[in-house]
Length: 247
Image (cartoon, rainbow, N blue to C red; front, side, top):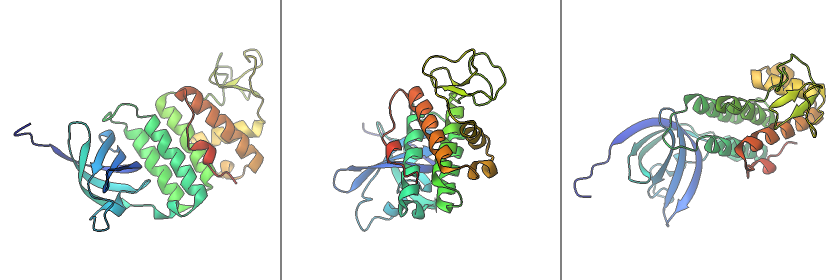
């Protein structure tokens, strides 16, 4: 349209995903601090002469200037804040970061809808993976549990999800919403070890001392329950979760 002038805006963002577009461009999916999830075209970033191609890689924290477009916005400037390069060189951390990025994208189905809590949660998880001070699988499960809390899907871990009776309870039912007492336990409910539910509660609340003291079999059982709960609410599987290296 003649006379059309794009509005510029600036924000900081976590890069969730990049896709090739044509011979030199990319579509970049960003989770921004103030504008929610945004998809934008980064022109020429696949050329060796690109000024900011290396700054728009997955999992990085960037400061971007964008121009509003009719369908996709346009990246006009990009500066790296923390690019988290070590994540991409370590398979366990890379797969955990991929699952976090995919979850963040699935939990923001409406573009440009601000979600500051999810942005801060995603940013913190990427920083934790880059710092490599905690096991990546625990960082991922803590993120998934807290992200479900942001979405309103947090599993009940201390009270019966049906009647509210204080636990601990031995049953866990994804359709019922988490832990269930013996009276409310539906057919097919899982029977996780008490330590598994304690680990999930520790991850959800940020009790890293208890979480890191857990044994590998307990971590694997907790991961299975967390993944099942998330994917039941999403009504579809996450492509990246089966690839996560939990060794």
